[in-house]
Structures are given as C-alpha cells and as structure tokens.
Image 1: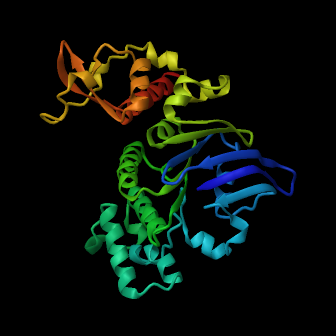
Image 2: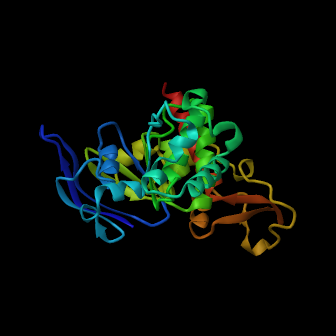
Image 3: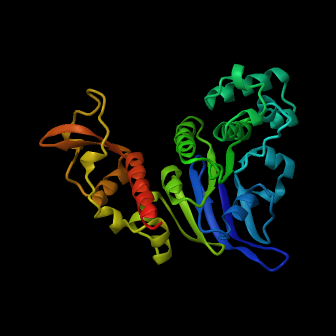
Length: 321
C-alpha cells in the first residue's frame, strides 16, 4: 500500500532527518511510528502526503510514485489528524468536517449526510454538536472532530501525528479504545506517530521503532517484546523479563466468556501457562479459551495481553520517576 524505498531526507541546513529508510505499510493495517524526539518519525509521516518532499529515494502509494500524483488530489485522499486538531475556530464543527468534501465538489445533500454519519460514528449527536464551534468542546471532543474531518471524504489512508498526546490520561485512554473500535469498522490504512510505547503496543498491528532517522526494528507488538534486535529496542520497549517474571497470572487477566461461547476443551490453554507461552499461542489464534481443572474459566486474546503489558510498562515508568 505505502512503500519507502531507500528514502533519505536532508534539510537545507545539513540536518539528516531520515536516512535510507525502507518500509512497507500494508493495506488496512494500523502502523505505528515511534522513537525518541528527533528520530524522524514525524518527517516520515509528512513525506507520505508531501508536506515534506524526500531528498533521495522513492515513496509509492498503491504502486504509484507519490510525485506522479497531483499534490492537491494526493492530500485530499489522505486524511490527516494533528496533535492540536487544526480545526478552524470560526467554523462550526459540521463546517470543519465538510471542508474536503466541499473542495471535491460533493453535492450539498451528500455532504450533510456524511457529516451526520461521521458525528454519529464518533459518538457526538449531530443535533447537539453539528452547529457548535470547536471552542465549545472539550479537548477529547475536538480530537473526535479532527478524526471525523480526516475521514470525511472516505480516504484510504489516515495519517495521525501524536493526536492524543495533549489530552489528560482518562480522555487519552478513552480515545485509544474508541480508535480501536473505529478501525474495526472502517478498516483504513492508519499511520500513527507517537512517543508513548504504551500507546504503540495498544494500538499497533505493527510498530516501527526509529532512532536517528533509521528504522531499527519493525514488527508486531509481540515480536518487539519477545525478540528486540538490540539493547536500544529492548530498553525502549521495556525488558520482557521484567514483566514476564513479575507475578504473571493468566487467571487475573482473562475475560469471562458469554455462556456457551467456548465449549471445546481441545482448543483451550491451561491457566498455568506463562506469558511467553500465551503469546506464542496467540500468534496463531485470535483468541483462546482458558481452562482450569478441565473446565473453561474464561478467554484470552491478543488485545488483553497487550493491555496487560502496557500496564506493566506504565508501572515501570512510574517506578522510575
């Protein structure tokens, strides 16, 4: 879907932001770029819609070089969500969402219907919020409008540059959960920049860890946790051993299934499995029943494990404060 082939970005002052970057982002995946400040993640994001042009190399979208697209058409077909929303304060929320459809000359009725559809999708009643101004909303609500605006013209790609970093922890966690649910429905290709490993582990299908303009490792959350390629990734993600040996108990994190959801003991894993073994089983299975003494006591899936690991990372971070 999106491919970087030997891409380098050097600014006029000689600063090298991205060096010989090679990566492929699959259609419909939630792909996260993460790394310390100045690692090149935002520059990488902005090169995808040509807010910044690369110095060397090739970037393709749908097997076509992005330089071959009309730049306005390219940007209209790529949704973009910023940290500070970028909403126009003099416009209503509905008018903000309608900007790109209007530029694409959609009919008014189609635009009105799309605005209402998106407001409902993000959990904001159109009758209440459509004609309000952004200043009348909370930070979390403004970000929801920003997401709706990015989705307005039904683009295949959404770029998100640290969209939740300015929010309070409760609003941030709620929007992360909502983003997971929304992606299940819309199945867009999402490229998400963050400096928060908890957020990356929770949201990403795959994560690209960057340092000094280079992709150090690309993999699923499980791959980064279990098999970091070097000490930088291990330290950035957090040592697996720190978490694996920290009183992991599968029984404490399983979800109770609906009656009759799981009945086949042959598919179940034991409640005594270690974190590492559980991760291994979930690599091949979306979710699994958990048994104790020959009875199904609950279920486990990838998202439950990732949320558990993210929580351990958060505890580890607070312990170092």
